Amino acid sequence: MSALAASPVLVPLATAAVTALAARHPRLQAALSGLGGVLLLLCALALVDQAHGAATLATAFGDWAAPFGIEFRIDRTGASLLLISALMGVATLLFLASDADTAPQPPLLLPLVHGLLAGVGGAFATADLFNLYVWFEVMLMGALGLFVLGGRTDQLDAAFKYLVLNLMGTLLLLFAVGMVYAATGHLNYEALAAAAGALPPALGTLLVGALLLAFLVKAGAFPLFAWLPASYHTLPAPVLALFAGLLTKVGVYAVLRTTGDVFADATGPLLREALGWIAAATMLLGVLGAAYHWDMRRILAFHIISQIGYILLAIALGGDAGHAATLFYTLHHIVVKANLFLIAALIWRATGSYDLRRIGGLYEARPALALLFLVPALSLVGIPPLSGFWAKLLVLQEALAQERFAWVAIALAVSVLTLYSMMKIWMQAFWKPHPDAAWRPQPGARVAAAWVVTLALAAITLAIGLNPQALIGFAEAAAQELGGAR
Amino acid sequence: MILWLALTVGVTIAAGTYLALSRDVFRCVIGLSLMGAGVNLALFASGRIGSAQPAVVALGETALGEAANALPQALVLTAIVIGFALLCFALALVLRLVQRAGTDDALALRQAEPHPDDPVKPPVADPRHEPLHPPSAPDALETLR
Image (tube, rainbow over all chains, first blue to last red; front, side, top):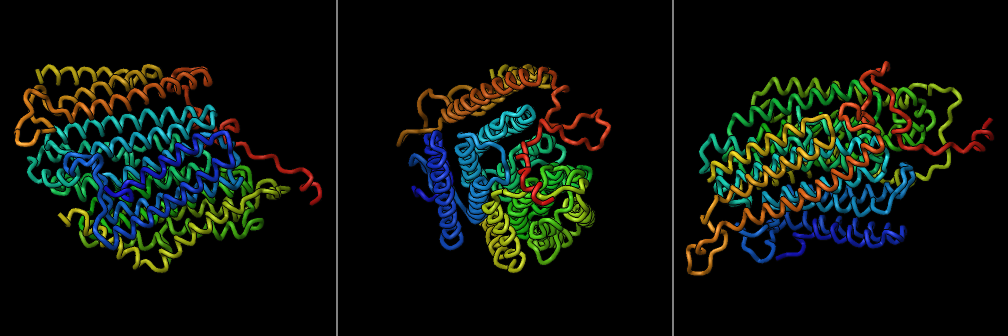
């Protein structure tokens, strides 16, 4: 048993425990939480190094050998997602140190953030289907705690909607896991992959379909995304960035793991076709929702859904190229999306509103912020040489290679609409004069830490965009490990 | 036996779904917990009723006497604990929500969502439901003029 393989869960859980104990001493708590975040980042770096260089790292708990005990198995896909989620955790913690978001920080905030990271880490690390369900529940509890911490009525309302719709998803997942066990007698990924080929095709389609339905609720895919735009905008900005970056992507990862790896042999063309059309509808409806809204948080929340569509399309295309595109797109998207929400918080700090109709004139007052916003915004649209261009290129190349012209056309049309709604934010918040002519940006905000975070995330976007081959090579190696290795 | 169990699961989940679709938020939570109970029963049945397929077998043996499959029991136990915690949280949340909002009608709970009757499309958020922006320092503005 290797402690490193368990570190994505152990480190955040231990940090959550000690920060909860230090709840009465805010400075000590912040220091401990920062320490835990950095430690998690270092462990994730070691895991990526291990997964990329040497053999896949695995550990079985309680010394029960693999098909019977609960196993953590971290391959390239899992390790890179763990690294990016640890990075998002550190970014959130650093952003909390600035006053770009002025919501009060209750003593339970930091333990809950680390609890959430433990759930995300567990989901990426585990190699056991029931264990995956448990980590989804841990994430759900952490997320609900973060929703209600602020105590505003709209936050309680949002938490209720989030709870009901996500609980439906988890119950469906639990049911599907039970049926998978009943049909195969296994829960371990590797044992399931061996057993999946022997399932009768109809039963296999039914089981994978039930699992996918549950994961698609979690990923926020059409038509199951209602919980996301109904609740996300009530969160405080740094937590919102963490949610936007990570939570739906865990659902996407589970879809990839199911169709691309564990049940690759039981996923027939019917399921792939259905997933592709779900992906197309997700892209289109997400971006239409974004085009309608004027509140920056709502616009960006709908863009999460739209981008999930692209990632799901890459999964539906399948094959090594499709899986590599999925991983590349997911990693790029987490950074860009979280950064956009953090920059929206900086805009709010300067202007006092998230509503584009009430703000303006920021290009004159804060030219650096205007330029900073353009990096993730144009990357989200897919303008070269930013990271989003390569991500979309990989997906569309594979779609063209498989002659899926309808999906390509929808994806390109959605890109144009994405450009429209990103330019809406830019024109309204930065370019047009402020509706109140006497308005001046508010001085005296301590936002240095927030600038460091957003600049660093923008630098990552630029670095991926200018040197995409390193990440593409990694994603291709990761894709060959999925499914093909068995 | 397994048919009766399947029927029970079906009826429980149907009753839970009916309650969860209710507009009364308390009924909705109770319905979800009933659905959870139904799913737990289904999970329990996934190891088959009676003594088949034991999960743990002693060395040199091929079956563990009359024991049933222990693994689904462990799974159900985990799921029950998680479900119970979530039910407690959901009840506390709904209680506080009803107290604050003054209604238990799911259609009237639109604090997080814009109201459909709002003349402005899309509606501007209610300032009570927005984060508090710190008041701008008046002296700085005064000195500028």
